[in-house]
Structure formats: C-alpha cells, structure tokens
Amino acid sequence: MENRPAGLRPGRTGTTRGPGPLNAPDLLPPETDVLVIGGGNAALCAALSAKEQEVDTIVLERAGEEESGGNSRFTAGAFRCVYDGVEDLRALMPDLTDEEVAKTDFGCYTEDRFFDDMGRVTQYRCDPDLVEALVRDSRGTLLWMKSKGIRFLPIWGRQAFEIDGKFKFWGGLTVETWGGGPGLVAGLVRAAGKDGIPIHYGARAVSLITDGTGVVGARVKSGGVFREIHANSVVLAAGGFEANHEWRARYLGPGWDLARVRGSRFNTGDGIRMALETGAAPYGHWSGCHAVGWDRNAPEFGDLRVGDGFQKHSYPFSIMVNAHGRRFVDEGADFRNYTYAKYGGVILNQPGQFAWQIFDRKMTHLLRDEYRIREVTRVSAPTLEELAGKLDGVNGENLLATIQEYNSAVRQEVPFSPNIKDGRCTEGLDIPKSNWANTIDTGPFEAYAVTCGVTFTFGGLRINPQGHVLDTDLCPIDGLYAAGELVGGLFYFNYPGGTGLMSGSVFGRRAGVSAAAHAKERRASGSGATSRQAMPERSTRQREG
Image 1 (cartoon, rainbow, N blue to C red):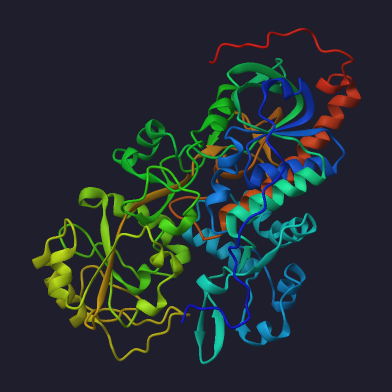
Image 2 (image 1 turned 135 degrees about the horizontal axis):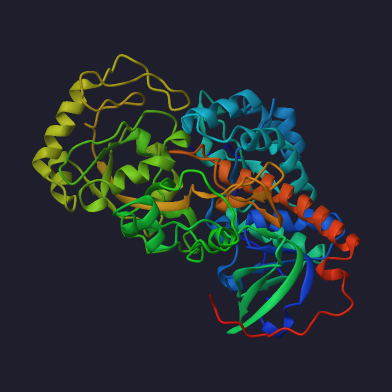
C-alpha cells in the first residue's frame, strides 16, 4: 500500500511565514550589486548564492506576499537528485532513523541513470552542457540548500509502495522538502532574511535597462509608480509564460488557451519578454510544456489552499476514457514520473478537453492522497452499468464495450507489482496498456474527471552552464543571467518528475555566483552602479512599454 511506515514523518506540514513585505515604492533602492527578478526557488537560490559572495543583493517579487513564491509554492517539493546509496541520503537527511532505514529499500540513483532519463524522455533533444551541469551539481546543490536551513525527507507517501513489509522506492525520485513547496519557499525566505537580503513584494519588473554594452538594471512598477533600479548584474528567474493565455495559444497551439494553470497567475512571460527585447536568444521547445491530468473543475489558476491536490497521478492503475467512451493512451507506458508531464496535453486534445480515470476496488487502496481531497470531482457506483450512466459527457454504451474489450485483453497470468514495470499488459488492443493492467470488474467502482493543467512552458532563454544569458549570436549579454522555468533547452516533449525544482536550484545557484563575480568586476572597474558616489537624477515615473 501507498502508506508510510509507522513513525515516519509527513512531508507537507504547515509553513512558517517570512519577514513582512516590503511593498512601498519609496522602499525600492535606486541601485544594488545584484538584482534578482522573481520570488520562487530559482530566484531565492540565486539571491542566496550571490549574497555569499559579499555583494549587495535584492529580490523583486511581482506578487504580493500572500501569493508570492511563483510555481514553487504550488509544488509537492520533490527534487530529482543523484545518490549512490542510503549514506548519501543520510548526509542530506540526518533525521533518518535506523528503524526507517531498515524498513525501506531506497536503492540508488546514479549520474548515469539521471543522464539516461533526461535523454530518453526528451527524445535526446536536451542541451548536453546544461544537462551535465544539472546532473553533476544535483547532490551538491541540495547539500548547499541544507546548509541554508532547508530540510529534506524521503517521499514516503507517493514514491514508495509497501511490499512484504518493506517500502521500496521507484522511478528515481526519492527526496522532497519538509512542508512541500510552501515549506521550501518559506525556508528560502527565512534564509534570505538571515542573510539580510530584502524581498520587495508587489514589485513588477517591466523592462531591462541597457547602457549600450549590456544590462545595467530594470524599470520596476511598485504601488502604481514606475522607478529605475540600477544594478551591476541582473538575474531573471520569473517563470515561464503558462499563465499568459495569448502566448499559450500563440506558441503551444490552438486550444491551449483553454487549459487550466496549475500554479501562479503571475507567470506571464515577463522575464522572457524583457530579455528578448535586449537581444537574448530564444531557445528550447517553445511549442511544448509540462502539462498534467488536473481536476476537471479546478479553477483557472492554482489555489494555494489546495496546492498540487488537483492533480490526479494514480492513472497507471486505471483506464482513462474520453467523451466517446474510448481509451486513448497507454496508461502503463512507464512510471508516472516519466509520463505525467505529457499526458495533460493528450487529455487536452480529447473531445471536450476532458477524460475520466476509472478504478475498480482492487486498485483503490493505491490511490494517492490527492484523490481524497474535498474538492475532487468523483463518481462511484456498485456496478459498471450504473457508473457508465453517471459519467458526465461520456457515451455509456461505448464505455461498457471498451471495458469488456479491455478486460478480455489483460494478461492475468503475469503477477502485478506497483514497484516495477511489471509487464502485466494487454494483448490485441489498438491502444495497449504495457504495465499494471488489471481487469475492471470488481465493484464498487470509482471514476475521477480530469482535464489539462499546465505547469510550466519549455521554451525560454538560452543560457550557458554558468547561467549567463546568450544573445542571438550566442555571445553572453553583459550583466544578464537567468535560472528556473524561463530557461530553455532542458526539456522537450516530456519531463522527468522532480527535475524542475532541481534545475531551478542548480542554475539559480550558478547564476548567483556568476552575477556576483560580474558585479565585483564592474564595481572594481569604476563602471558599476554601486561604484558611483551619487546617481544622476532620473524620472521616478516611466511609461510602461
């Protein structure tokens, strides 16, 4: 069963609020060494690593404090990282007890496996230099975050099933932050406060300032007032464009404007747009995105009260049917970690942009916690005939025929095991189920309505492994760095679960170090923003655009 052993600590407790908001326009400083634009995991890692180099650093967060943290606040806090065995995990999670270790098979996740997973799921389109930095820095970056006060623990409830009294992890994803995404952001905000890094909430960067040689700051709207902040280095970490309906339709294609947004409503592509306006190179899979099965009645944007609870990721143990009552995808093609980020797009392409996941009683004990939230769209019935009549928008006659055909095709002689790709498959169907195929014949039956939820977009800016933004000639833009979901080139077509937060941390840390070094160089040369005794008078109100 998908439960944690007795005594194992839960991973998503309450969060601790950070320092009070700095949202008055008069509090915005006129200059700094490193200006970080964004307020999530990548941005805060960049700010912390820059501050370590003893340079003045400030953070601009477009959202108010209550909605701050970008998409990071909406995640479950999972990090995909390299570990060679349980001792590597104990270095990262010193609270692990001997009893917990004895009850758990953590296995290992080597650099080679991480490289293989990145290549396989992106059809080998991912940028090799960026992937090498991501993989080789993953473990060290989490240890660095631990030194900043971030706590980690195993993903007991979602990545390990109990078999013969022992919990076995699967799919290469083992580590999450204490308190999930909200706990991660709260911890990073606390670390920023300890390091004296001010976070200005409600401060929206609208354009970059250039001086003919590079980027020297940003124009910012705060409290209805436009101001300029001059900086020796700027780090962009403001997320992708998934909350921009028009950009989704323009780049992802027709119908994508109809998708729900899993996370922040503030990720409208501002960071990408500002960089492109300065000559930055677009890069990556601009027509691709991370999109999952999401509750059909979820709101337009993410709800922090629910977090990631609208997702529905136990589909490998179900069959999924569309409005015609037909299956349309191989639910058991791979572990959900390697399919969930692309199946949202498949659901969006179905009639009416929805599907139903159907489980029988043999599988309902394996359902993840998100299937039990109050807001879930759920139908149950003692018989298939009654269930078919309850599924909104579904051709019931076709559905019953689909289930009968599916049940007849299941190879029941193959043992079922949720911890491995068990090969328990169907035979003779146009759309196979490759693993975890179980007949749908034991009531009561449960069904869950899902649509498409966009997490983040894959297209973005081109950077080098040090986090420096490149121009269209593939030369570094002086003073401009980037990290997080607005970086292109890492993900194509699909995504290994837990890689988003990991890449944000790795490249956030790298961008912060690089930005700080550049700021010191500019300051030492006498050309930097903070090298001046007095700044020239500048208008505090700018016309947007």
